[in-house]
Image 1 (tube, each protein chain N blue to C red):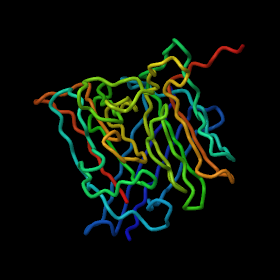
Image 2: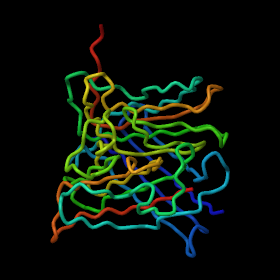
Image 3: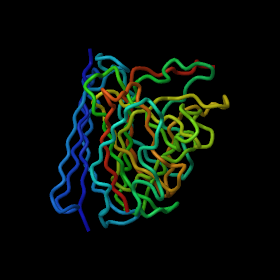
Image 4: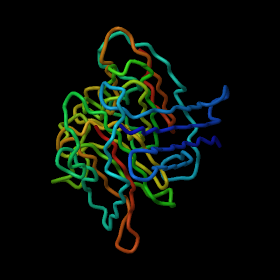
Length: 161
Length: 151
C-alpha cells in the first residue's frame, strides 16, 4: 500500500472579513477503504499542435489501461496543469468523448460528445475525483491556441484504485 | 485589486521507486487577464442529512448567461471521517466522481449553459451516500454570479 497525499492551500484577501482561506490535506485511499491508492499513470505531458478537441485521459481501456473500472467504487483522482505563461491562453476541459465534435455540447445532454467542465488559463491547475467508468467519462481537452511552433502543453497524473 | 493564490503539493514516498513530489502555485485571475478575482461565496460548512442530490452553487438565470465562460473556481470537501461515506459530484447530472471521506476537489467551472432551459444549467450538485448526516465544506471564488430576482 502506498501513501499519496495532496495538500491544498488557498489564500485570499477578497473578503473584508478575511479569506477565504483553505488549508486541507487528503490522503488518497481506495473506495470505501483506508488502504491507499497504489496505481498511477505517472506524470504525463501532452503536446498539442492544433486546437483540435481531443481525449486527454480515457476511461476503461485508455491511457489508464489497468484502471479498475467500477460503476460503484472508483476513488481515482486527476491532477491537470496547463503549462503556459500567457494568461490569455487557455485549454477547455471536458467530460465525455471528443470524437465527432470539435465543440462542446450543452451540459445536461448525454455525455457524448463532451460537455465543458471548465477552463485552465495559463499556469492554472486542478485536482478532481474521476469516475472514469466508461468511454463517456473521458477527460477531453481543447486548446484556445496551439501550433507546431508553439504547442499547447498540459501535464497530468492519474491516481487510481 | 484582490489577490487569491492557490497551491497544491502532491507527495508520495512509496508509490514509485523514487519519491513523488509535485508542487504548483498560481494566482487566480479573471478570464484571460491578469486582474485578480474579486468575488466569493465564502466557505460554507453544511451538515446534510439526506441522500438527495442538491445544488450547492447558485444556478444561472434562465435566458441570461452573464458569467458563462468566466473564471470560477470551486472547492468541495467531504469532511466525513468514515471511509465508507462518500458524495457523488455531478454537473447537471453528469457524474464527475466521488469524494470519499477527507477528499476534496479544486476545479475551474465554466457555468456552461444547458440545452433545455430547465433551470439546471451548469449547476454543481452533491449527493451524500448516507442519510445519517455528513459534513461538507464548499467555496467558490469567481468574477461574478447572477442572482435571481426575488419574486
